[in-house]
Length: 287
Image 1: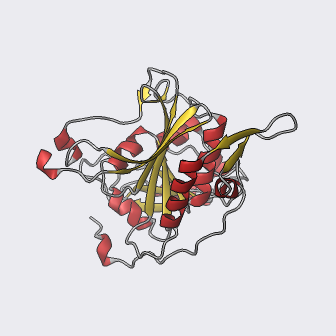
Image 2 (image 1 turned 30 degrees about the vertical axis):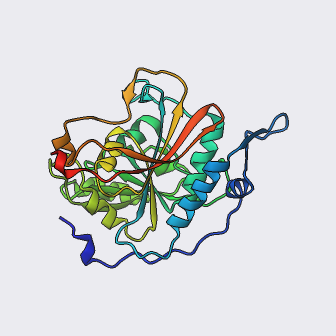
């Protein structure tokens, strides 16, 4: 397994200037859905302050042994992130989607699992605010990523870094590399069915920050780990009765109790509730 402390630390990244949607937060007003006929407006005071604090944490002078990790996802009131497994289900409202793209612009890399690529075919780019596109990263232990997906074919998408296992076929690796993907082999996790997050983050050590967008297996793996710095959840005021955002289990399975959030900020943005939080330290005495 990778021991991060033995490798070079990540150097601090220069603090970028606020612009576009960032400037709207700085002025305490978020403009959304602007076109010839309408322009929605949202006052966001507490969230603006919390996002500014997050931005400074992302670009602080602190020397770190891994990227700053923000887990973010949207769910319904009953905790569903999709109506059914493999079904693309828009959940966030227009206003909170602007916030999501603002967060993408704040991070250097954006990470999803291969199931999200297969079901949603995301671009993982910044389109609803001003800012640079983060580097897409796909966790794919068996290289199931479709060669025809947007990340591999669209001229508007950065080609992804694909984190995979050390046992994958060299033939598939060569095909994906020919399409522009970067392949990085990682250690397997303890059960051998996925990738070890410490190894994944070590392979992303040149990036100061990583935004994790899902899906459920990836969200669950990260919130059960010790590698998450912030969690941002958008809650849509409806019920879906679908696939939950988190895969539960007994405390022993978590390696230290059920994850619990420490709320930093709670705001209503448009019709959604947006929660910015930290993970509380796990109580090892529970196991």
